Image (cartoon, rainbow, N blue to C red; front, side, top):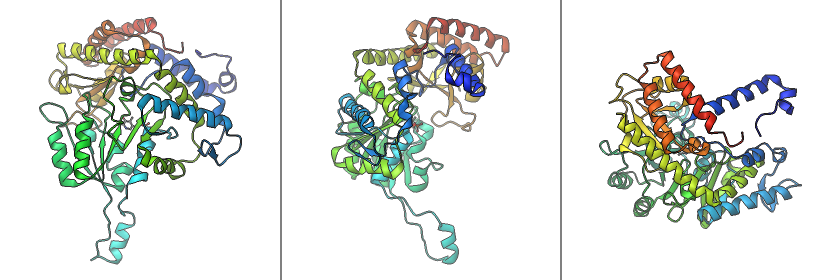
Length: 440
Ligand SMILES: *Cc1c(COP(=O)(O)O)cnc(C)c1O
Protein backbone atom coordinates (compact mmCIF):
# COMPACT_ATOMS: atom_id res chain seq x y z
CA UNK A 1 0.00 0.00 0.00
CA UNK A 2 2.65 2.47 -0.98
CA UNK A 3 1.18 5.88 -1.73
CA UNK A 4 -0.90 6.12 -4.89
CA UNK A 5 -1.03 9.46 -6.67
CA UNK A 6 -4.48 8.59 -8.01
CA UNK A 7 -5.88 8.00 -4.53
CA UNK A 8 -8.84 10.05 -3.30
CA UNK A 9 -6.80 12.37 -1.08
CA UNK A 10 -4.26 13.02 -3.85
CA UNK A 11 -7.03 14.03 -6.24
CA UNK A 12 -9.20 15.91 -3.79
CA UNK A 13 -6.77 17.64 -1.47
CA UNK A 14 -3.30 18.31 -2.93
CA UNK A 15 -2.39 20.53 0.01
CA UNK A 16 -2.74 17.69 2.53
CA UNK A 17 -1.43 15.12 0.05
CA UNK A 18 1.89 16.93 -0.15
CA UNK A 19 2.47 16.16 3.52
CA UNK A 20 1.61 12.49 2.93
CA UNK A 21 4.19 12.24 0.18
CA UNK A 22 6.80 14.07 2.25
CA UNK A 23 6.13 11.88 5.28
CA UNK A 24 6.40 8.67 3.28
CA UNK A 25 9.71 9.89 1.90
CA UNK A 26 10.90 10.82 5.42
CA UNK A 27 9.95 7.46 6.93
CA UNK A 28 11.38 5.60 3.94
CA UNK A 29 14.79 7.30 3.91
CA UNK A 30 15.59 7.82 7.60
CA UNK A 31 16.61 5.50 10.42
CA UNK A 32 13.94 5.59 13.14
CA UNK A 33 15.58 5.18 16.54
CA UNK A 34 12.84 6.79 18.64
CA UNK A 35 12.21 4.06 21.19
CA UNK A 36 8.45 4.62 21.33
CA UNK A 37 7.87 4.32 17.58
CA UNK A 38 7.43 1.47 15.15
CA UNK A 39 6.17 0.65 11.65
CA UNK A 40 2.85 -1.21 11.48
CA UNK A 41 2.05 -3.97 8.99
CA UNK A 42 -0.02 -3.31 5.85
CA UNK A 43 -2.94 -5.13 7.49
CA UNK A 44 -2.86 -2.92 10.61
CA UNK A 45 -2.54 0.14 8.40
CA UNK A 46 -5.57 -0.90 6.39
CA UNK A 47 -7.67 -1.45 9.52
CA UNK A 48 -6.61 1.94 10.93
CA UNK A 49 -7.80 3.68 7.77
CA UNK A 50 -11.02 1.73 7.45
CA UNK A 51 -14.80 2.28 7.42
CA UNK A 52 -14.93 1.52 11.13
CA UNK A 53 -14.19 5.23 11.55
CA UNK A 54 -17.78 5.91 10.43
CA UNK A 55 -19.51 4.36 13.38
CA UNK A 56 -20.51 5.33 16.89
CA UNK A 57 -20.28 2.46 19.37
CA UNK A 58 -20.63 3.98 22.85
CA UNK A 59 -20.92 1.23 25.42
CA UNK A 60 -19.55 -2.30 25.27
CA UNK A 61 -20.30 -5.40 23.16
CA UNK A 62 -23.92 -6.43 23.70
CA UNK A 63 -24.65 -3.20 25.62
CA UNK A 64 -24.37 -0.32 23.14
CA UNK A 65 -26.09 3.05 23.10
CA UNK A 66 -26.42 2.98 19.29
CA UNK A 67 -28.01 0.65 16.77
CA UNK A 68 -26.10 -1.10 14.02
CA UNK A 69 -23.20 -2.13 16.25
CA UNK A 70 -23.15 -5.87 15.48
CA UNK A 71 -19.87 -5.68 13.55
CA UNK A 72 -18.39 -3.37 16.19
CA UNK A 73 -19.21 -6.06 18.75
CA UNK A 74 -17.45 -8.70 16.67
CA UNK A 75 -14.32 -6.58 16.35
CA UNK A 76 -14.20 -5.53 19.99
CA UNK A 77 -14.81 -9.08 21.25
CA UNK A 78 -12.01 -10.40 19.05
CA UNK A 79 -9.67 -7.68 20.31
CA UNK A 80 -10.52 -8.37 23.98
CA UNK A 81 -10.19 -12.14 23.60
CA UNK A 82 -6.83 -11.79 21.91
CA UNK A 83 -5.55 -9.54 24.69
CA UNK A 84 -6.58 -12.15 27.26
CA UNK A 85 -4.76 -14.81 25.26
CA UNK A 86 -1.66 -12.65 24.80
CA UNK A 87 -1.30 -11.44 28.37
CA UNK A 88 -3.30 -13.95 30.40
CA UNK A 89 -5.26 -11.18 32.12
CA UNK A 90 -8.71 -11.54 33.72
CA UNK A 91 -10.20 -8.53 31.97
CA UNK A 92 -9.25 -6.20 29.11
CA UNK A 93 -10.58 -2.86 27.95
CA UNK A 94 -9.44 -2.04 24.40
CA UNK A 95 -11.19 1.34 24.13
CA UNK A 96 -8.68 3.83 25.63
CA UNK A 97 -7.60 6.14 22.82
CA UNK A 98 -4.07 6.41 24.19
CA UNK A 99 -1.76 5.14 26.89
CA UNK A 100 -2.40 8.32 28.87
CA UNK A 101 -6.14 7.75 28.80
CA UNK A 102 -5.68 4.16 29.93
CA UNK A 103 -3.79 5.47 32.98
CA UNK A 104 -6.37 8.18 33.64
CA UNK A 105 -9.11 5.57 33.54
CA UNK A 106 -7.29 3.54 36.20
CA UNK A 107 -6.98 6.64 38.39
CA UNK A 108 -10.64 7.51 37.89
CA UNK A 109 -11.61 3.95 38.83
CA UNK A 110 -9.57 3.84 42.02
CA UNK A 111 -8.40 7.16 43.45
CA UNK A 112 -9.75 10.34 45.03
CA UNK A 113 -8.34 13.67 43.84
CA UNK A 114 -7.52 16.52 46.21
CA UNK A 115 -9.67 19.63 46.13
CA UNK A 116 -7.28 22.18 44.85
CA UNK A 117 -9.64 24.04 42.56
CA UNK A 118 -10.98 27.31 43.85
CA UNK A 119 -8.46 27.12 46.65
CA UNK A 120 -7.15 30.67 46.45
CA UNK A 121 -10.64 32.11 46.21
CA UNK A 122 -11.79 30.29 49.33
CA UNK A 123 -8.65 31.20 51.20
CA UNK A 124 -9.35 34.86 50.53
CA UNK A 125 -12.81 34.59 52.07
CA UNK A 126 -11.65 32.57 55.02
CA UNK A 127 -7.94 33.09 55.54
CA UNK A 128 -7.58 31.01 58.70
CA UNK A 129 -9.15 27.86 57.43
CA UNK A 130 -7.10 25.36 55.50
CA UNK A 131 -9.43 24.29 52.73
CA UNK A 132 -7.42 21.93 50.64
CA UNK A 133 -8.27 18.28 51.11
CA UNK A 134 -5.36 16.13 50.10
CA UNK A 135 -5.65 13.82 47.14
CA UNK A 136 -4.65 10.17 47.30
CA UNK A 137 -0.94 9.42 47.14
CA UNK A 138 0.90 7.98 44.12
CA UNK A 139 4.38 6.47 44.38
CA UNK A 140 6.04 6.32 40.96
CA UNK A 141 9.29 6.64 39.04
CA UNK A 142 10.56 10.20 38.62
CA UNK A 143 10.13 11.55 35.06
CA UNK A 144 13.78 12.61 35.04
CA UNK A 145 14.75 9.03 35.87
CA UNK A 146 12.73 7.49 33.06
CA UNK A 147 9.13 7.79 34.32
CA UNK A 148 6.14 9.16 32.39
CA UNK A 149 4.17 12.42 32.54
CA UNK A 150 1.02 10.56 33.54
CA UNK A 151 2.73 9.11 36.61
CA UNK A 152 2.34 12.32 38.60
CA UNK A 153 4.24 15.09 36.84
CA UNK A 154 2.95 18.44 38.18
CA UNK A 155 1.88 19.66 34.72
CA UNK A 156 -0.22 16.52 34.15
CA UNK A 157 -3.67 15.79 35.56
CA UNK A 158 -2.10 13.04 37.68
CA UNK A 159 0.20 15.56 39.35
CA UNK A 160 -2.48 18.21 39.76
CA UNK A 161 -5.11 15.96 41.32
CA UNK A 162 -3.03 13.58 43.42
CA UNK A 163 -0.16 13.79 45.87
CA UNK A 164 2.97 12.24 44.46
CA UNK A 165 6.19 10.77 45.78
CA UNK A 166 8.85 9.59 43.35
CA UNK A 167 11.41 6.85 43.53
CA UNK A 168 14.45 7.12 41.30
CA UNK A 169 17.39 5.11 40.10
CA UNK A 170 20.58 4.70 42.09
CA UNK A 171 23.24 7.25 41.10
CA UNK A 172 25.97 4.60 40.80
CA UNK A 173 24.09 1.70 39.22
CA UNK A 174 21.45 3.53 37.18
CA UNK A 175 18.99 0.88 38.42
CA UNK A 176 15.90 1.11 40.60
CA UNK A 177 16.84 0.44 44.20
CA UNK A 178 14.11 -1.69 45.79
CA UNK A 179 15.23 -0.82 49.35
CA UNK A 180 14.65 2.82 48.50
CA UNK A 181 11.22 2.02 47.04
CA UNK A 182 10.28 0.13 50.23
CA UNK A 183 11.50 2.96 52.46
CA UNK A 184 9.53 5.58 50.47
CA UNK A 185 6.41 3.40 50.38
CA UNK A 186 6.43 3.00 54.16
CA UNK A 187 6.95 6.73 54.55
CA UNK A 188 4.36 8.09 52.07
CA UNK A 189 1.76 5.30 52.37
CA UNK A 190 0.61 5.44 48.73
CA UNK A 191 -2.84 4.45 47.54
CA UNK A 192 -1.23 3.40 44.26
CA UNK A 193 2.29 2.32 43.35
CA UNK A 194 3.05 2.82 39.66
CA UNK A 195 5.73 0.80 37.92
CA UNK A 196 6.83 1.06 34.32
CA UNK A 197 8.73 3.70 32.39
CA UNK A 198 9.49 5.48 29.14
CA UNK A 199 13.25 5.30 29.45
CA UNK A 200 14.41 2.45 31.68
CA UNK A 201 16.56 -0.26 30.14
CA UNK A 202 16.50 -2.89 32.87
CA UNK A 203 14.17 -5.71 33.93
CA UNK A 204 11.34 -4.76 36.30
CA UNK A 205 11.11 -6.86 39.47
CA UNK A 206 7.32 -7.01 39.66
CA UNK A 207 7.34 -9.48 42.56
CA UNK A 208 9.39 -7.14 44.72
CA UNK A 209 6.98 -4.28 43.93
CA UNK A 210 4.00 -6.52 44.70
CA UNK A 211 5.46 -7.43 48.05
CA UNK A 212 5.98 -3.75 48.92
CA UNK A 213 2.46 -2.87 47.74
CA UNK A 214 1.06 -5.61 49.93
CA UNK A 215 3.19 -4.47 52.86
CA UNK A 216 1.83 -0.88 52.75
CA UNK A 217 -1.70 -1.70 51.54
CA UNK A 218 -1.28 -0.02 48.14
CA UNK A 219 -2.69 -1.00 44.77
CA UNK A 220 -0.20 -1.83 42.06
CA UNK A 221 -0.27 -0.54 38.48
CA UNK A 222 2.22 -1.64 35.85
CA UNK A 223 2.36 0.72 32.88
CA UNK A 224 4.08 -1.42 30.26
CA UNK A 225 3.60 1.07 27.39
CA UNK A 226 7.16 0.56 26.18
CA UNK A 227 7.74 -3.13 26.85
CA UNK A 228 4.28 -4.57 26.09
CA UNK A 229 5.54 -6.41 23.00
CA UNK A 230 8.39 -7.95 24.97
CA UNK A 231 5.97 -8.99 27.73
CA UNK A 232 3.45 -10.44 25.26
CA UNK A 233 6.24 -12.48 23.66
CA UNK A 234 7.59 -13.72 26.99
CA UNK A 235 10.83 -11.78 26.53
CA UNK A 236 10.28 -9.74 29.71
CA UNK A 237 8.62 -11.04 32.91
CA UNK A 238 4.89 -10.32 32.98
CA UNK A 239 3.37 -8.04 35.65
CA UNK A 240 -0.12 -9.40 34.97
CA UNK A 241 -0.17 -12.08 37.71
CA UNK A 242 0.82 -9.70 40.53
CA UNK A 243 -0.70 -6.33 39.55
CA UNK A 244 -4.18 -4.96 40.11
CA UNK A 245 -3.93 -3.05 36.83
CA UNK A 246 -1.73 -3.22 33.75
CA UNK A 247 -1.90 -0.45 31.15
CA UNK A 248 -0.12 -0.01 27.86
CA UNK A 249 -0.03 1.74 24.55
CA UNK A 250 -0.56 -0.42 21.49
CA UNK A 251 1.81 1.41 19.14
CA UNK A 252 5.26 0.93 20.65
CA UNK A 253 6.90 -2.53 20.85
CA UNK A 254 3.42 -4.05 20.50
CA UNK A 255 3.47 -2.73 16.91
CA UNK A 256 -0.20 -1.91 16.60
CA UNK A 257 -2.05 1.33 15.85
CA UNK A 258 -1.71 4.45 18.00
CA UNK A 259 -3.87 3.65 21.02
CA UNK A 260 -4.21 2.41 24.58
CA UNK A 261 -5.22 -0.72 26.45
CA UNK A 262 -6.07 -1.37 30.09
CA UNK A 263 -6.14 -4.73 31.86
CA UNK A 264 -7.17 -5.62 35.39
CA UNK A 265 -8.10 -8.29 37.87
CA UNK A 266 -11.73 -9.46 37.66
CA UNK A 267 -12.74 -7.54 40.81
CA UNK A 268 -11.93 -4.22 39.07
CA UNK A 269 -13.50 -5.06 35.68
CA UNK A 270 -16.76 -3.13 36.13
CA UNK A 271 -15.10 -0.07 37.65
CA UNK A 272 -12.46 0.05 34.93
CA UNK A 273 -15.02 -0.22 32.13
CA UNK A 274 -17.17 2.51 33.66
CA UNK A 275 -14.11 4.71 34.06
CA UNK A 276 -13.19 4.40 30.37
CA UNK A 277 -16.80 4.89 29.25
CA UNK A 278 -18.69 6.96 30.31
CA UNK A 279 -16.04 8.19 32.75
CA UNK A 280 -13.29 9.34 30.41
CA UNK A 281 -14.41 8.90 26.82
CA UNK A 282 -17.43 8.95 24.56
CA UNK A 283 -17.49 6.86 21.42
CA UNK A 284 -14.44 4.62 21.05
CA UNK A 285 -12.25 5.03 17.95
CA UNK A 286 -13.49 1.81 16.38
CA UNK A 287 -11.07 1.97 13.42
CA UNK A 288 -8.30 1.95 16.04
CA UNK A 289 -9.99 -0.93 17.90
CA UNK A 290 -10.16 -2.83 14.59
CA UNK A 291 -6.47 -2.17 13.99
CA UNK A 292 -5.71 -3.28 17.57
CA UNK A 293 -7.55 -6.55 16.90
CA UNK A 294 -5.42 -7.16 13.80
CA UNK A 295 -2.21 -6.25 15.63
CA UNK A 296 -3.05 -8.55 18.57
CA UNK A 297 -3.62 -11.32 16.03
CA UNK A 298 -0.14 -10.69 14.64
CA UNK A 299 1.32 -10.72 18.15
CA UNK A 300 -0.14 -14.19 18.69
CA UNK A 301 1.82 -15.54 15.69
CA UNK A 302 5.13 -17.33 16.33
CA UNK A 303 7.02 -14.72 14.28
CA UNK A 304 6.24 -12.09 16.89
CA UNK A 305 8.36 -13.76 19.55
CA UNK A 306 11.20 -13.95 17.07
CA UNK A 307 10.76 -10.24 16.31
CA UNK A 308 10.94 -9.30 19.99
CA UNK A 309 14.05 -11.44 20.47
CA UNK A 310 15.68 -9.58 17.58
CA UNK A 311 14.63 -6.20 19.04
CA UNK A 312 16.51 -7.06 22.25
CA UNK A 313 19.52 -8.54 20.46
CA UNK A 314 19.77 -5.40 18.32
CA UNK A 315 19.51 -3.14 21.37
CA UNK A 316 22.25 -5.04 23.17
CA UNK A 317 24.51 -4.89 20.11
CA UNK A 318 23.84 -1.18 19.59
CA UNK A 319 24.57 -0.43 23.27
CA UNK A 320 27.80 -2.44 23.24
CA UNK A 321 28.98 -0.79 20.01
CA UNK A 322 28.27 2.68 21.40
CA UNK A 323 30.10 1.86 24.63
CA UNK A 324 33.11 0.63 22.63
CA UNK A 325 33.08 4.06 20.96
CA UNK A 326 33.25 5.79 24.34
CA UNK A 327 29.59 6.72 24.67
CA UNK A 328 28.27 5.88 28.13
CA UNK A 329 24.93 4.13 28.49
CA UNK A 330 22.99 4.72 31.72
CA UNK A 331 23.22 1.55 33.87
CA UNK A 332 25.92 0.23 31.53
CA UNK A 333 23.65 -1.40 28.94
CA UNK A 334 20.18 -2.69 28.25
CA UNK A 335 17.98 -5.74 28.85
CA UNK A 336 15.19 -4.53 26.59
CA UNK A 337 14.61 -2.38 23.48
CA UNK A 338 15.76 1.00 24.82
CA UNK A 339 18.89 2.72 26.09
CA UNK A 340 19.83 6.12 27.43
CA UNK A 341 23.05 7.55 26.06
CA UNK A 342 24.89 9.74 28.56
CA UNK A 343 26.88 12.26 26.50
CA UNK A 344 28.74 13.87 29.39
CA UNK A 345 31.96 11.84 29.38
CA UNK A 346 32.55 11.32 25.67
CA UNK A 347 31.20 14.68 24.46
CA UNK A 348 31.02 17.08 27.43
CA UNK A 349 30.22 20.09 25.24
CA UNK A 350 27.44 18.45 23.26
CA UNK A 351 23.90 18.64 24.67
CA UNK A 352 21.15 16.17 23.87
CA UNK A 353 19.41 18.91 21.87
CA UNK A 354 22.50 19.50 19.71
CA UNK A 355 23.00 15.77 19.16
CA UNK A 356 19.32 15.32 18.23
CA UNK A 357 19.62 18.13 15.68
CA UNK A 358 22.83 16.85 14.07
CA UNK A 359 21.60 13.26 13.96
CA UNK A 360 18.38 14.53 12.38
CA UNK A 361 20.37 16.26 9.63
CA UNK A 362 22.13 12.94 9.05
CA UNK A 363 18.77 11.11 8.71
CA UNK A 364 18.98 9.40 12.10
CA UNK A 365 15.87 10.21 14.11
CA UNK A 366 16.23 10.18 17.91
CA UNK A 367 15.02 12.19 20.88
CA UNK A 368 16.98 14.11 23.44
CA UNK A 369 16.26 12.88 26.96
CA UNK A 370 17.08 13.84 30.52
CA UNK A 371 19.44 11.37 32.16
CA UNK A 372 19.15 10.62 35.89
CA UNK A 373 20.61 13.51 37.93
CA UNK A 374 20.95 15.60 34.77
CA UNK A 375 22.20 19.12 35.42
CA UNK A 376 21.03 20.48 32.10
CA UNK A 377 17.52 21.77 31.42
CA UNK A 378 14.80 19.58 29.86
CA UNK A 379 15.06 21.45 26.53
CA UNK A 380 18.84 20.82 26.46
CA UNK A 381 19.53 17.58 28.37
CA UNK A 382 22.72 15.52 28.57
CA UNK A 383 21.23 12.42 27.03
CA UNK A 384 19.67 10.71 24.06
CA UNK A 385 17.12 7.94 24.13
CA UNK A 386 17.58 5.26 21.49
CA UNK A 387 15.42 2.23 20.73
CA UNK A 388 15.47 -0.60 18.22
CA UNK A 389 11.79 -1.61 17.61
CA UNK A 390 11.39 0.31 14.33
CA UNK A 391 14.77 -0.61 12.82
CA UNK A 392 14.18 -4.26 13.73
CA UNK A 393 10.81 -4.16 11.95
CA UNK A 394 12.65 -2.95 8.84
CA UNK A 395 14.90 -5.99 9.10
CA UNK A 396 18.14 -4.46 10.33
CA UNK A 397 20.24 -6.89 12.37
CA UNK A 398 23.34 -6.85 14.60
CA UNK A 399 25.76 -6.09 11.72
CA UNK A 400 23.74 -3.02 10.79
CA UNK A 401 23.56 -2.00 14.48
CA UNK A 402 27.35 -1.79 14.53
CA UNK A 403 27.23 0.46 11.46
CA UNK A 404 24.46 2.56 13.01
CA UNK A 405 26.59 3.00 16.16
CA UNK A 406 29.47 4.18 13.99
CA UNK A 407 27.24 6.67 12.14
CA UNK A 408 25.74 7.97 15.40
CA UNK A 409 29.18 8.54 16.93
CA UNK A 410 30.40 10.27 13.77
CA UNK A 411 27.39 12.59 13.71
CA UNK A 412 27.74 13.52 17.40
CA UNK A 413 31.45 14.12 16.87
CA UNK A 414 30.84 16.26 13.77
CA UNK A 415 30.25 19.45 15.78
CA UNK A 416 27.46 20.09 13.30
CA UNK A 417 29.73 20.12 10.22
CA UNK A 418 27.35 20.08 7.25
CA UNK A 419 29.58 18.06 4.92
CA UNK A 420 30.21 15.32 7.51
CA UNK A 421 26.47 15.15 8.22
CA UNK A 422 25.73 15.14 4.48
CA UNK A 423 28.00 12.11 3.97
CA UNK A 424 26.30 10.25 6.80
CA UNK A 425 22.94 11.18 5.28
CA UNK A 426 23.99 9.42 2.06
CA UNK A 427 25.08 6.29 3.95
CA UNK A 428 21.73 6.29 5.74
CA UNK A 429 19.84 6.57 2.43
CA UNK A 430 21.75 3.59 1.05
CA UNK A 431 20.97 1.52 4.13
CA UNK A 432 17.28 2.43 3.93
CA UNK A 433 17.14 1.24 0.32
CA UNK A 434 18.15 -2.25 1.46
CA UNK A 435 15.61 -2.40 4.29
CA UNK A 436 12.11 -1.56 3.09
CA UNK A 437 9.22 -0.32 5.19
CA UNK A 438 6.64 -3.06 5.79
CA UNK A 439 3.98 -1.43 3.61
CA UNK A 440 6.29 -0.54 0.71
C1 LIG B 1 4.20 6.31 25.81
C2 LIG B 1 3.82 6.13 27.24
C3 LIG B 1 2.53 6.45 27.70
C4 LIG B 1 1.51 7.28 26.96
O1 LIG B 1 1.13 6.98 25.77
P1 LIG B 1 0.28 7.98 24.84
O2 LIG B 1 -0.38 7.02 23.94
O3 LIG B 1 1.28 8.87 24.20
O4 LIG B 1 -0.67 8.72 25.69
C5 LIG B 1 2.21 6.13 29.00
N1 LIG B 1 3.10 5.56 29.82
C6 LIG B 1 4.35 5.28 29.42
C7 LIG B 1 5.29 4.65 30.39
C8 LIG B 1 4.76 5.58 28.12
O5 LIG B 1 6.02 5.34 27.75
